[in-house]
Image (cartoon, rainbow, N blue to C red; front, side, top):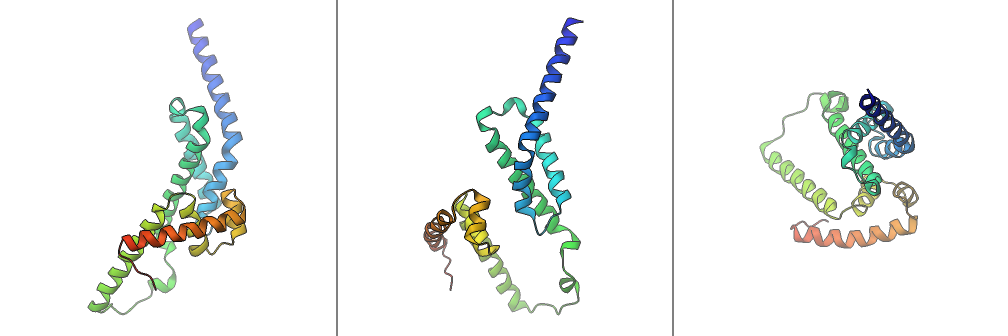
Length: 186
C-alpha cells in the first residue's frame, strides 16, 4: 500500500510540474507558432499545435535537460508550425478561385522553362536555409514577407540595427552560396 501511495505522490508531483511548465511556456510556444502561420493558419491551428508540442514534451520529459528546455520548446514549436503550413498548403481551400478556373494548357516549350524556374527557386531557398538561423529568417522576413527591420528585430529579439547589419552580412554570404551553386540573379 505504501508503494502505491508513493507512486501516486510522484505522479501528482509530475503532473503539477508539467502544469507549471505549461503555464510558464505556453505563451512562448504559441507566439512562435502564430508568428510562423499567421496569414495562412488560424488561431485554432496555433492552439492545437501548442497542445501537440506540450504532448511531445510530456512524452519525452525524462530526456530533456533542464538548461535545454527552452531551446527544445522553440525547436518543437518551429516544427509544429512547419507541419501546419505544409498541411494547409496542400488543402483545396488554400487554392484561390483564379487558380481553379480553366486555363489553357501550357505549351511544351514553357513546361521546361517552368520546371527550370521551379528548380532555381528551390536551390535559392536551399541556399537561404544554408545561412542558418537567424540569418535565414531575416532574409525571408525582409524579402519574402516584406517586414520592416523594427518588426524583424521584435520577432527575433534583437535591435533593428542588428537585424539590418545581419541582413547585410547574410546577403554577402548568400551571394557566394548562390555563385557556388551556379545561380546568377539579375
